[in-house]
Image 1 (cartoon, rainbow, N blue to C red):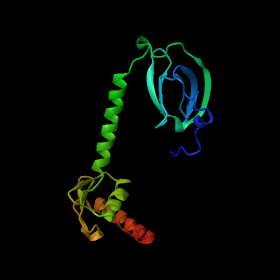
Image 2: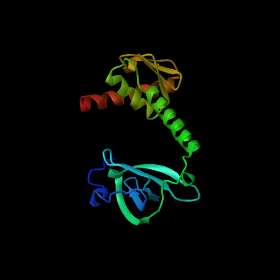
Image 3: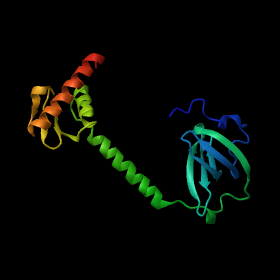
Image 4: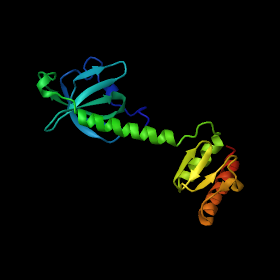
Length: 182
């Protein structure tokens, strides 16, 4: 997502921009819309903190460059009353766990010590079949092994049907790599 030109936050004068206690209706570049009270604002990275109203108040950090719609709704007397603010630790832990799982899954998809061509072939195979790296070999469907230099005659194991399927994808990917000069 490129926030360039999307922000309406710059339309507000610097002196009144996101004053603590201001209540806004906000729309961000992702399409999310919410109402919130400005709890803090840092003009250097252009980040503000707004709790989301409802039965409970959750805090949301917002990069003001990603705001596409902003409506001033009013001002609250004391937005920093501790009794009215809390952090949803369970929600934060769930987001952290999801981010860690995603990072681990992405790391497993990267071959260590393999060429860009080998990684491209792995990525092509992964679009239609379950694959994993085993050292510099690509293990397809936990049964078919593709060894360097990742040519059709470097495919071993598995049933004839699985073996032929892997060979076909390899040939197509090699053609694509030659066509685009990668």
